[in-house]
Picture 1 (cartoon, one colour):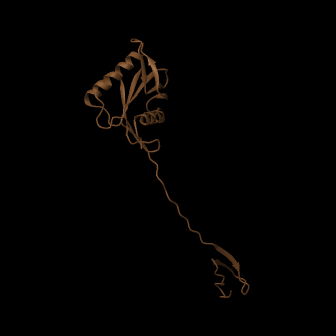
Picture 2 (cartoon, helix red, strand yellow; picture 1 turned 90 degrees about the horizontal axis):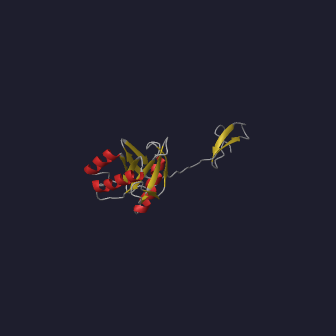
Length: 177
């Protein structure tokens, strides 16, 4: 189980890399700093995607809020970082998705919402993106086996070939041992 926001960020990057083709990304890079083209401010981003088919940058913001959906103020901040860095678009990752006002900003500013369950792990996860759901599940199986030895023997009395199981050595044709 993911214990905190740092682990959730790491997991989000790994899972986004796993579904990068569906996100139309060539790759997802780790946490880094980008410089704003308008403001000159340094922005720390949780991850940076590289668009498939171009060198366009996609800013990835990860928020592990488990009590409420992300609000319009939070999406507004991401929208400005996208604009200031000249990024192509953005991806917001959270367990619960977006409030109504945040959805409006996401739609207007080309920000894609990806929901990753807060209790996800690298092996057991649920990821929602657009109309797709990606699930990873592991299970444990217990396998038992039992064998019985069967030996073919030739009867010394009647010369018949018979099978004996375990220590039984009586010919089933002439009943001799």
